[in-house]
Amino acid sequence: MSTKGEQTREKILNEARLLFKQKGFGATTINDLLDASGTTKGNLYFHFSDKEAVVLEVLQREQQSFYRFIDQAFSGKSAAAGLDHFFHNALEKNRQSGFVGGCLFGNAALETSDTSPLFAGLVRDVFTEWIKKFEEKISSAQAAEQIRTDIPAGDLAEMVVATVEGGIMQSRLQKSADPLKRSLETLRRVLGLKVNQ
Image 1 (tube, rainbow, N blue to C red):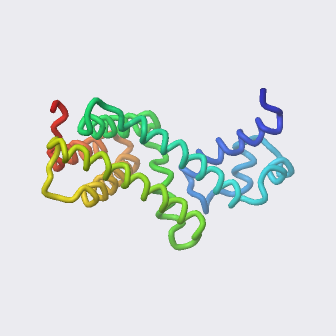
Image 2 (cartoon, rainbow, N blue to C red; image 1 turned 120 degrees about the vertical axis):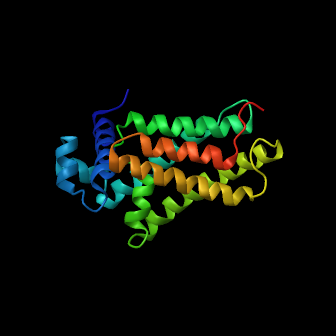
Image 3 (cartoon, rainbow, N blue to C red; image 1 turned 90 degrees about the vertical axis):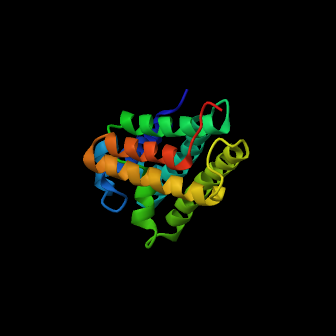
């Protein structure tokens, strides 16, 4: 059973994650964190030295959560089925959020890449790992002739991640599943995905 202090810390982190997704890291103030979590400044500073410490822990937790999501989303009887399953899960994950907040790492990449080397480095690691996992899955699908083989797996992996991120951004902007859905359908066609093989 968690202590009251642990519960307070979790509440701060959970509310901070939502605020960072909706308002951004820079625009979220300490007072925003206090209001959302219902805690005092003394409690917040007992658990975290400053707002940057909150940001770092939120990003680190989200990083581990995202890696688990990727591994689960890539499941399937074949490499092509794993890719298709990922596309389905990416759409559902964003649909469940109501297309509010978008991708925390995409947001962080835009907001911190020129201002915070620490945060930018963590986000870069996330994208590097995501592309690597796609490259491995695409390479396996190519070896099984389940997708096109005329473009290197690494190049396709970078294109897929960029397209997924762009689709998420457009769906967030329009508050509609349609842009992301179209992006994912286009990826299936561009890859020449053969799920039933």
